[in-house]
Image (tube, rainbow, N blue to C red; front, side, top):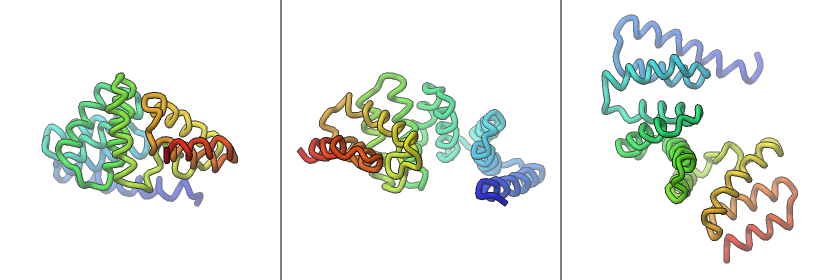
Length: 193
């Protein structure tokens, strides 16, 4: 079994159990969790149907709005994503996916032209969970291509706020990992100025 197959097999088993649970009792919780399993498996259309079923049964459950919003943001459905993510942030502020929610909401705001709101949310995402790899790569770029994507995201934040010390510092760390020492030093200098 490859490393990629392990988590997928776990999701398949979870999906089997969630399908059985829904056949016995179609509760909002089960729809929400099955929707999240489907989202993680890349079955977005089915996941959205389950998220909608969960919201219809229990509109007070913040996780389902968070998961649906993250899925919609991944599909660049920014307006819909922002509506869901705003609800999730307003409802629950202490669960572990918060950094992901704030990041997706920040990307949605950026796409819709709210640059300052985007900066606030992405900064909040980073502060909530320092291990969260913002843009998938800024903290620990796995490949040079991923690091370049992270730098582009950080460039967008810095273009809106040239003195944004957090973005400058992370761009510096990312450049350092790419071996761009002079550019990294310039970013670090700007971060502490």
